[in-house]
Length: 107
Length: 107
DNA sequence: TTCTTATGTGGCTATATTACCACATATCGC
DNA sequence: GCGATATGTGGTAATATAGCCACATAAGAA
Image (tube, rainbow over the protein chains, first blue to last red):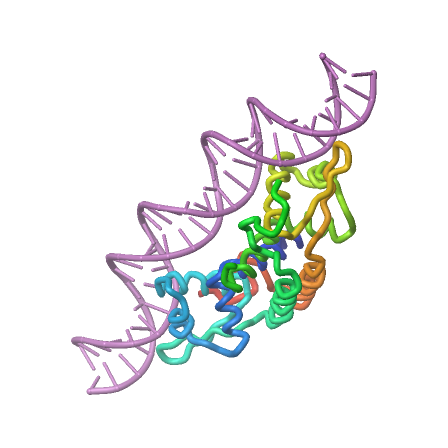
């Protein structure tokens, strides 16, 4: 069992990539097959497949096979709250995550 | 202004490194100077300095100079909720973030 | 002024991450 | 069986990240 802070960091890291974050948010709305998820992004299908493998390895999603298709669903439903929380962060703080530096004093 | 999902991903990424996550959690408890923060981790002081620069650039922390010391404090207090949420995730799901694969079916 | 402490930046290297292509496997319809 | 569809993996190249050292700056102490 890894250190708690490292486990937390690992989850955050997993959902800190735009494609993986979007996958998680898409799964909030229900089960999706790999092909549906892949079609959402302008990257290679196999790249999405690897993102899914990472999410699966961390236990963030789980999958189910049905014929040709493999359906993914969220296994950590609590991420819904976490990301809702993050939406609140951005809504309440317009300067957040604008790493161009504008709007803040330079150093 | 970047795409919303990218801004969210950027915040998550910033706090997805064990040292930066620990810095944020330490700042939950109040203002700390760079030297106090640096002493918490077994990495070079200048490395911590760069982590702080990243958190500052994203607007996650802000700083204040007082004599020789530079004090950092959290500027996105809402992260407290977000990380409390994540603690709940890990408390409720023992299998989370154990990327060794044990406890889950292999693929 | 000179020394010491606190801090940040530039530069470099090692490692990790991402994305693509090529290819392999599995299932379905015919 | 054969072709088409859905999916995953291995390999590799480009890029990003993390860490350390050397060095620069700033402020207080002597």
